[in-house]
Image (cartoon, rainbow over all chains, first blue to last red; front, side, top):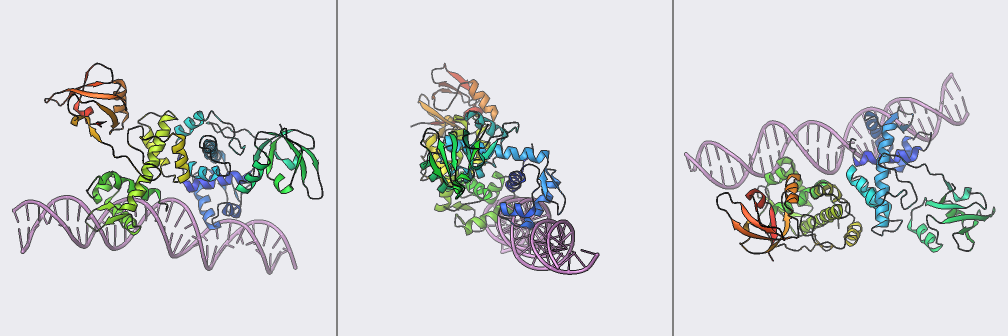
Length: 220
Length: 220
DNA sequence: TATTTAATTTAGATTTATCTAAACCTATTT
DNA sequence: AAATAGGTTTAGATAAATCTAAATTAAATA
């Protein structure tokens, strides 16, 4: 497996996250995501195309090919394993792990990562509930849906939270909404889109639409 | 604390290791150590001087000042903590840790390193027996001497090994010479400078001068 | 279909870290 | 003191990653 620069890796990872399913990614989307300028994106797309990691025709957007996807999954594997390590072993809080993992993920020594994986007991998800690709790049396709889409009276498992600010963390901790706990929607109010939910064995309580938008569950 | 590029950090670390005690470091020494060219060294020295990390007058060699030394100790702290982590937790062998730590050491998040230190139980030396600076940059001055300098019949502790090749590792493992074990020199032969030593509770045996040159002990 | 707008690409410049080759110092030797 | 040999620095180039500003293209609108 070849090595890629930190910058190339950041582009590859961002494309992976943006392209989702069938769509292609545009120059502006990517520039926005990476806080850089469209011209810089075009330059890098030429480079990654030359390295045969993506499909790209000028003005037509781009999309990782098989090789590019493999590289992306390697980066994501490293990122999520480090996140797990930071939260589980070093006792970082949930909202702190992402930033540190952004740096650690670029240390790309296969043996290091595979041994880390083993040391951690081959965790299947990171602290935000996102699946960790295995050593071969296989990743579980998560059946995650937003809790706003969960039908009434259907039990599901809280699996991740999209926002990663410390503000949301504070609120989730206070309400004891943690990844892995069971949840059921008891009632939805059309007026403000708030909902009443039951988490674990707690009594039913209300959450705002704003919060609900950020909670994802595994319906199985 | 400011941040420095990977390249700057490598120069700072190399100067720290080369300058030892009173001496200054020369352009060629550093170029050789870093496998780069003298011209590149001069460029970087100007840069580090501008950043007030070292004393440097053209043609007169250079030496880290107080601030530069602090930066160097921070890098060495990170390096050695990661080495300890790799050996102790991920079960890397002795000769493998250095290379991986060379990459990890450049992730400079103070909280990460301090939490790693705590997780590891505040180890005082890395797997090669070299002391780990604490969070304030304090480092134990080790009374390490080469085993060739140890007087006869004086018990000391094997504290480090300078060569880090897998060849020496193989030999040391075979002879059961590990860091932390007691050692005593029983006899020295002038002819080939070989010596008879006792390690731990093993019977006395002979080691070559070549090997002895690489074994360091703490005489206390 | 021609025009306009917005997105995208190109051209040319900048910064960092590196290099080679030439110029320049320092110190030793004659 | 002059010559010379080595080490060191300068000058000028290159590659990677970025930027601004200008040119270009695609798509939407009139």
